[in-house]
Image (cartoon, rainbow, N blue to C red; front, side, top):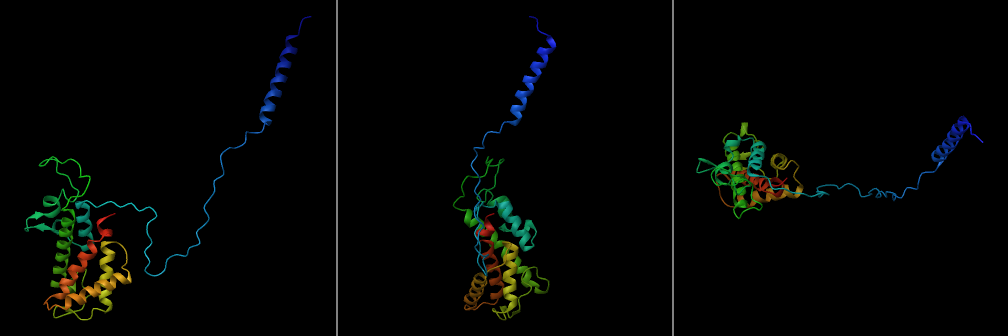
Length: 229
C-alpha cells in the first residue's frame, strides 16, 4: 500500500508541533540557589558627642615622604620647597630622608622600589619634617599676627596667651585639626593642648605662646591620622 507523501509530511508536522508545545509548557527545573538572607537593620543609634566611630574596613597606608610633605604644605599654607631643610640647604624629603620616608633613588643608590618595611630612622625623619614645618608656620605667624595664616586668632600679650581658656584658643586648636587631619578636634583633644600650654607656661619663657603654637601643630601633624591614609 503506497503512502501519500503529503499525509506523511502533515503527520510529522503534527508530531513536531506537539513535542514543541510540551516543551514550552514544561515547568522549569526548581531553583536550587539558596535564598539570600539579608542581615537585620541595625537599631543602634548614631554616636553622640565626641565619640569617634572606627572604620568598618580599617586599612592604613603610611604616607610617602612626598605625600606627607605635600599635605603639610597644604595644611600649613607653606610653599612645598619651604617645608623642611637640613642645614638650611638640603630638602629633608627629596635629599636627606628620601629612602627612610618611602622614596626611591634609582640613579645614585640603585633603589628602584620603596623599602618593604620602614627603617629605624623613619619615625625620626617624619618628626623632623613635621616639627620643621610647624616651627616655620608659627614663626611667620607670630611675626605678623594680623596677617597670620593659622594662629592669627590668638590673643597674645608679652609673648604669652592672654587666656588659655578663651574661645580663640579652642578655635585655633580646631583649625589645626581641620587642616592637618580633616576633622574637628574632640573636647579631650582641646583640653590636652590647653593643658600642654599650662605646663609650658609654668617655665618662664619670653615666647611661650609661639612655642606652644609650634608644638601643638607638631603634636597634631605627627598623629597616626596625619601620617597614614
